[in-house]
Image (cartoon, rainbow, N blue to C red):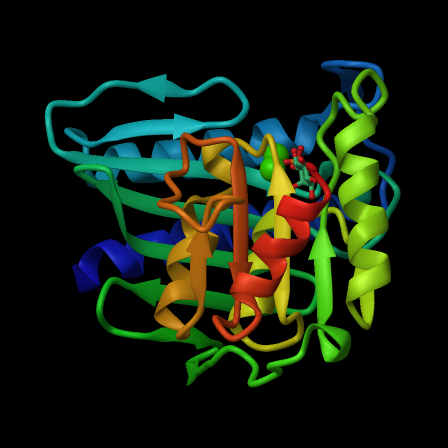
Length: 259
Ligand code: IPD
Ligand code: CA
Ligand code: CA
């Protein structure tokens, strides 16, 4: 497993260097939807990461946001977001990262998230804890929602379906100390893991947004479920991540917002 994590880190840093290199420069922007962007940098980062993983583990499957979907012959699958936080990146807002998770038989076993501007590298291995730049990290100890700093994001179809997302946001603004919308789900999860945030929820994320982050949260002592407090898989629609102490309260607010 150590070898897998080392290569995940190498790949995340390789992609991260690309993001850093083009940061602050004019990017080629294409639109996947009215507010859903992709840049030449997302694609370049994905290409280099996939080439590296392929060369080291030719039998592994690879799923990445910008089009890579390769079925290998082994039980391992790399799930990659080559640039999480593209809208931020396109605006030179420095919250974005590379996110790489390794799935084995449906379970995430290794994870690396790299934020190249602040040079923050989050890693986790199943059963071996979570680390930020080599130091063990833990979730926060905040036990009262009114003292909790929460984070969320809005799906790209928020303009067509604003209703529930806005209602959830409103309910949490009322219930928590404050709510942030930073624009990178993978970083949101890492920030829960290291205690900057006390909780996070979001609907309609994709496997590459959460694959790495959920292992980093659980290995840091946090909890990850769906909105009802049940099992979360990266192929499911709704995720709640928290320090554990606030988890039931967060699910309860989501339940009230649906009554
Ligand atoms: C997005 C970010 C954002 C979240 C969106 C994601 P992208 O990923 O994680 O925080 O709210 O739902 O799609 O498109 O920047 O890789
Ligand atoms: Ca993403
Ligand atoms: Ca992305």
